[in-house]
Image (tube, rainbow, N blue to C red):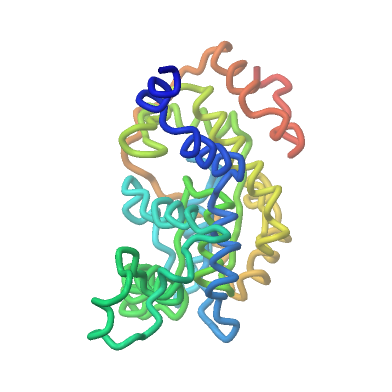
Length: 309
């Protein structure tokens, strides 16, 4: 009787055991990309080198960096394209299912004559993994690369404030010569600026609005920590906003890394943005909550609160 009740309300012992083993394996984008690299490696001869400018959340200087890179007249950097759709996040998340033993080799179409297929097991009949990669790549080629080329650009990319370093593993699988610049700003300065815009934007629409300093700080920490931990693996360049606006050497490093020339005059040209509600009061409590949420990563980057609160 107990086994019957357990099976009816929780599932069979075998099913529960299988699910537990899957959970223990901690499937993620990284593990999925590793399996896909085995099944259908990136094309080593691919010369396409898109530029991905990622910042640790909003109001971190990503638009300034975008304008600096686009001061090169042949470079188009899209600004958070269709951001609330979470397109790259969704496409990258779909690779989590790839793992040892899945998909089974028996699922992959082997090119058999079509008239023979109705005599075979075809309940699971998949195109080849190489077709999966081509399909993913063609989406971004058509959405981002082609319109950039039509505008006269010879180089393209995007700037984003929601993507993690793990998403970059997926993007590098699609574009093995991609370049990644990770931008990080003092979290209190970023939050103060964010507060002036009403604190109502979505990290993931519509389920994850960022309304509080804790939510803002947790996202900042997760993104910044990922950038720091995976920069070497991705051959990425990590830049602090404070260095970007004060150091000629930092600008030169970006130029060298991206193999482009940047017009330094962009730094002195301020462009306004919509949606700003004016000055915002940020209480000592909010500052304390934010400080707790972003550490110890903020401290490791040399960001101190001092008299900031």
